Structure formats: C-alpha cells, structure tokens
Image (cartoon, rainbow, N blue to C red; front, side):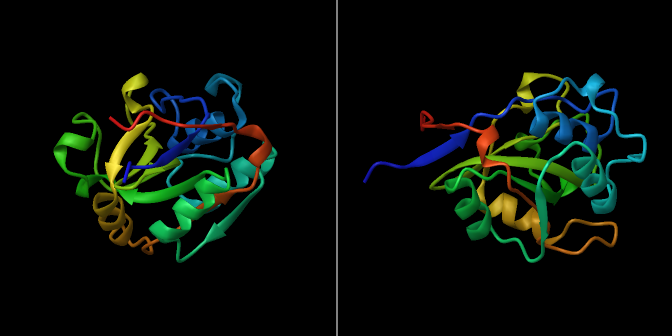
Length: 172
C-alpha cells in the first residue's frame, strides 16, 4: 500500500527577532511578522499569551487537553492546523535547530504522512523551519514531557479552515 498524507498550504515565518507566539500568529494570518501587533505577548511561551494574540488577530481557536496524535491527524485531515506544545530539548539532534534552546516551544502542525507530522518550526531562522518532518514517536514523546511545569499533550486546534488549501505532498 502506498503511504498517504496531506499538507495544508500555510506560509512559514521564523521567530528570529520576535517571539514564538508572534511567528505562529503571522503564519496563521498570512501577515508579515512585523505586521503582527501583539504587545501583550512577552515571551510567547504561555498559552494565555498565545490565545490572546490569536484572538486579537481574529484567529478562531480552541484549547485542547489532552491533544493526542490521533486528534492532530484528524484535525489536519479536516483542514484545521494545530498549534502544539513540545519540549525542544527532547527532540533528537537531527530534527532540531542546533542553535535553538531547550524547553517548551510551540510548533504549527500542518500535515502528516503515515509516519510523520509535518510542521512549521519557527525556531529555525529561515526556510529550513518550513514543513519539518518529525516522526510520530518523536512528536508524541516531546508532547508528553513539555518541561518547565507545563502539562503534557496540549495545544490549540485552529478553526479557520477557509484560510488553508489542501495539497498532496510528495512522500519521498
């Protein structure tokens, strides 16, 4: 059987020079990060700050806990991306930006294959963060231990389906 998958057409923006939350909001609204006004977002590492920033920019979302891999895949299949909290320090070296820190970090899940979640990782300074493929077991592990007292398996489902177009992806 051929492997299958899908990916949503969402632009990538790096968080370099801004917060993690600002980059996520920029991706979800297709605005240049410099055009995302989020004065209440200080660090970008809090669910409250990210939720407030998304709300202020008209992004419809719902906080979910638990948010499991099967939920993420189901939402992506319905053209809804997910913002998920991971522990960047627990990602194997070959999958992460070697210059980035460790600890809690938001990524935007935009696609999947049978074996991977495809995400935009704003901790990369350039297009290397676009459509990163992380094995399902890596995503599950990093979501289960987000660090710094954060609860496991949590994130946001983004309910703005009209912003995104389904694209079939090459499964190389």
